[in-house]
Length: 153
Image 1 (spheres, rainbow, N blue to C red):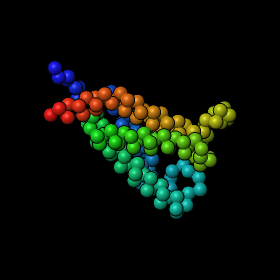
Image 2: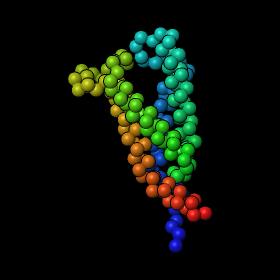
Image 3: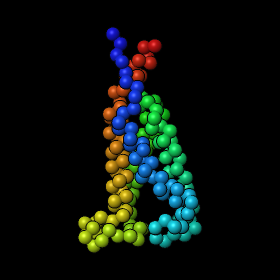
Image 4: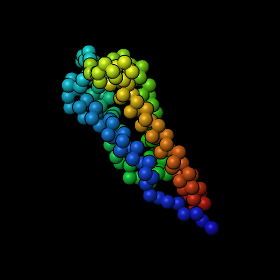
């Protein structure tokens, strides 16, 4: 007997929307007015790189929005999830190891526990990277079943 494969979205697909929530603010502000971002030592070179990064972030946000509603087994959605997982884990590592470049503080108590804007931003990226890994694992069986069903036809 053949097995039925559920084609609906996994609740874990919300990770694509969380990516948008985390990256769209810097994408919009980076494209619209990069010099108003709260970063230290901005010069013409860094403003160009911020705009380039913002363009990439905006592109991944659009791709995430388009992929969110797609079935979990599609190779394009799975490839985007891998790419975004690598991106967020890498951003997390970079932000954890970055010198202070955001001139804001959460107060002396938070600073004593190394809770800086850079570390908090890095933590959010790390959690999102983990979220993409969880999405992958939660949907891998559905993708395998669809691949097996496609081979039989």
